[in-house]
Image 1 (tube, rainbow, N blue to C red):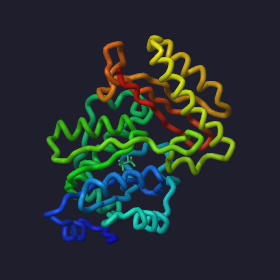
Image 2 (image 1 turned 90 degrees about the vertical axis):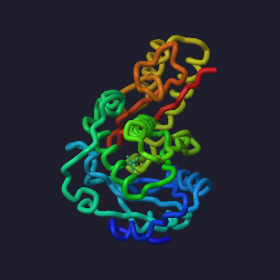
Image 3 (image 1 turned 180 degrees about the horizontal axis):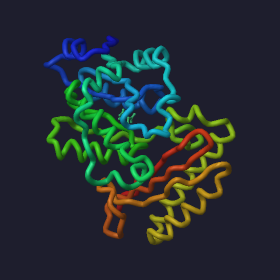
Image 4 (image 1 turned 135 degrees about the vertical axis):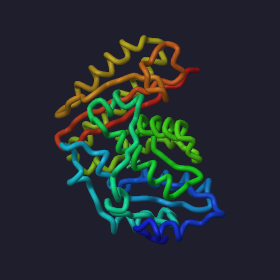
Length: 276
Ligand code: PAF
């Protein structure tokens, strides 16, 4: 595996005659990232991963400074997973002038966007820069960040970006807890409590399948999440997927998404219900 950190090195190293599967990350890799690499390896000649903790997607009171980082560990995991090229740029490399940024017009004022103002502008800005640099054939994103996936798909369509976006399933612990770099902030007891989130979502999906109306499903899901000790609900939403508009009885796919705040970590999780 080759590691590069400048634009010049990257451009010099990237092949022009091979398909490129791209896995953008913020590091502190876990099995979720590994499964993205696995998918990318299966479908492309070459796998490129980026590790960059993107400052523009963090709000002023968020965890940018304490976001977990361990490059040595990440490098080893990326190598073992079969990444061919690791791009590890600095902030100066990714934001040389910081004169222009991408702005999201629809779908950023709900779910995580409602409590993380400007977050998705930051995400789309960095994703756009990375796509321009890597010029991947396909790019791989986990559905744990289902809103992020929908907005990236929208951006790619609006800007005619020649890349295929691949949606990859959420990878979970045996308890059901969705894998996340931020799980390191949880105590063992909190991890156990947090596993209730997926159980609540699974029950919500069953309730929806049983024909209950959307309001009732949302109410029951909220009640169930309220029972999780030492945590606070940030949001519980049922939205049409991938438009992120309000869900209705006409929706073909409904994203049931939640965010729950523990002492040191805000966890998000979701399930997508498909009609029929
Ligand atoms: O999902 C992430 O890890 C980040 O939001 C991404 C897509 C790498 C952009 O910084």
